[in-house]
Amino acid sequence: MKLTILQVKTAEEIEDLASLAAEIWREYYVILITMEQIDYMIGKFQSVPAITDQINHQGYEYYLIREDGFAVGYLSCKQEEDKLFLSKFYIDKERRGRGYASQAMVFLEQLCQERNLRRIWLTVNRHNESSIGVYEKKGFRIVRDQLADIGNGFVMDDYIMEKEIPAPVNRPY
Image (cartoon, rainbow, N blue to C red):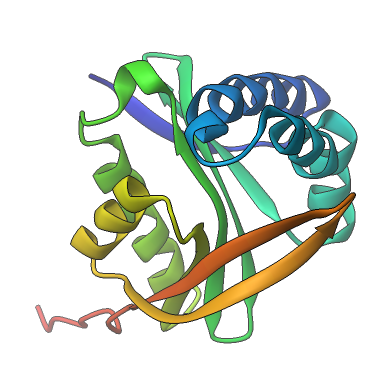
C-alpha cells in the first residue's frame, strides 16, 4: 500500500474532496444524527464553496489521503498559536481499520513538530464511541464538553479532546 497525504490546492482537488466528504458523512453519521442534519452540515461545512472559503479566507488546510493515487480519506486542520485544531479526519468505510489513521496521525505530529506546536485538539460527537476510542488509543484525552449551535435548529454535542506533542529530539551526530 502506497499512502500519500497531499495538501488540497486546486479547484479540482476541492471538488474531489467535497464529493468524498459527502459520501463518507452520509454513510457514517446516519447512526448519530439525522440525514437532515447531515445534509445541512455538508452544505455548511463540506461543500465546494464552504471548503474553498475555509482554505482561502479562514486559514484551514485540507489534505487528501490517497492510496495508490485513489482518495481514501481526508483531513483538515488549522494552526492556532501553539496548537493545531484538527477540524476533520475521515477515512472511507472500505479502508477503516487498515492503519491509515495511524499514518495520518504521524503526519499531523510531524507537522506540529515542524511548526513548533505543542498540542493537537479536536471536537468529536460525544456519542461517537468508535472515534473517541480511536482518538484515545492515539493519545488524546477528553478535556471538556461543548454544545454548539450550528444554525437551522441543529447543535453539535461534542467532547473536546487534546493530545500533547513532544518537542522534536535533536540528536548529536
